[in-house]
Amino acid sequence: MASLQDQLLKAGLINKGKAKQLHHDKVNQKKVERRTGAETVDDARVAALEAQQKNAERARELNAQRDAAAAQKAVFAQIVQMVQANRQSKGNGDITYYYTHGTKIDKIYVSAEVQGHLTAGRLVIVCIDGKVELVPRVVADKIAERDESIVIRVKKTSDEVDADDPYADYKIPDDFTW
Image 1 (tube, rainbow, N blue to C red):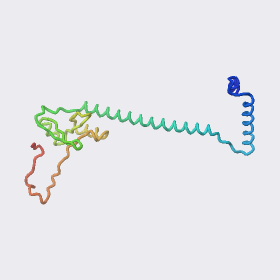
Image 2 (cartoon, one colour):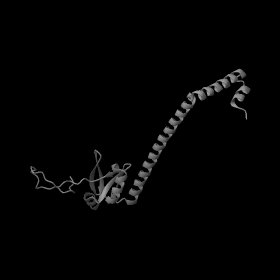
Image 3 (cartoon, rainbow, N blue to C red):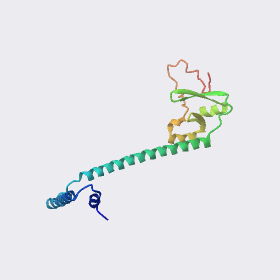
Image 4 (cartoon, helix red, strand yellow):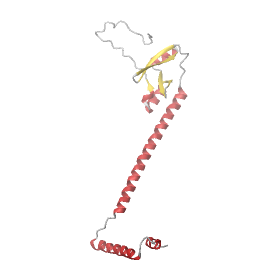
């Protein structure tokens, strides 16, 4: 197999004098390296190694992002599967139940029995892709481990009474609707 120098000569890209000069320079450089014991730095090789390292680092970052997105998608699929397997009926929907979702107050229509379960904390509201579902508290805890923002918990009101409250003797029931 012909060397690169022979191929360039055959193609007419360099002449014999230039090839001889390059060979002579290379031999002289090796002699100088042996005498001084120092290696000369090949700038092209260093630049190629740096570019290769940068490309490898970028590939690692892209792989990490891809893996994170795949893991997040898998977690969401687990949540959807848990909700579909454990969702509870809302009843015939004759009572309006209000809840807060973020800064917004939303409502769902439930039966009296379901309202009692929601108030007691046995059922929890889960909101996925704009759909509202009811799941048991145990399942909601498992969902909250994966993504807390999906689970909407009913906040228990404290039974502590302010000492200066003039209406302390008049309790408002939890299931009171306006």
